[in-house]
Length: 211
Image 1 (cartoon, rainbow, N blue to C red):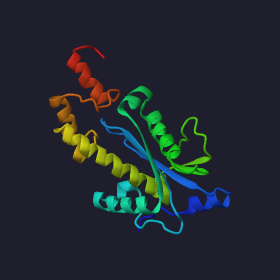
Image 2: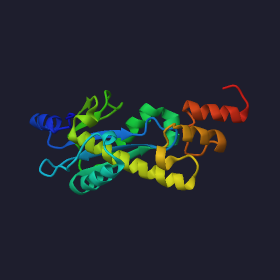
Image 3: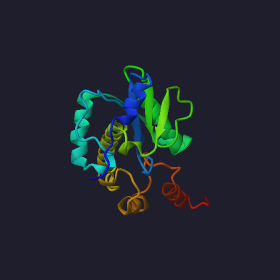
Image 4: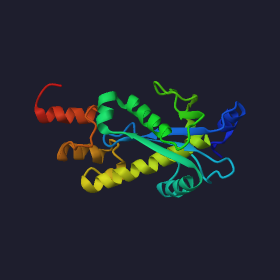
């Protein structure tokens, strides 16, 4: 059986004196369209939702069910960075901005933050540690990955109704063949990331200039 995330990072942080340990994860670095979304989650050790795992390992139906339980049982905050911010800052910095916004949005200040990945956001003022592949190792980060994924997918489904033809309700803005073909045939929308090469190239073609 594959390894599942556990509560060991949270317990270790608590043993070092941190009472409020929060997990943070983001989703949406790879898509060509839509915002990047982050979530911060503090789990109650006595009421941990069932079925927590890396969001990528759960079906959409299962994510929705676990999401509802997380919202009911845990403290949750979300943050996002817009397409404009992604294009201005670059996707890494925008992802970190979304993470910071998620942590700062918690009703009560976090004592220690477990961050998925290998980097701490620049200027992050909280006690924190980076956890590589944290969404598959820490229950708090796994919960954050689920919240961020579900909410971002909902945003993309809504945008798909406003901008039909790109398949965002299915591809969430990722560069699938369907999405790339639609970019060529339908053009670039206000929700596309102009700094991303496939979008940038199409804009250059439309202008008939060398980019």
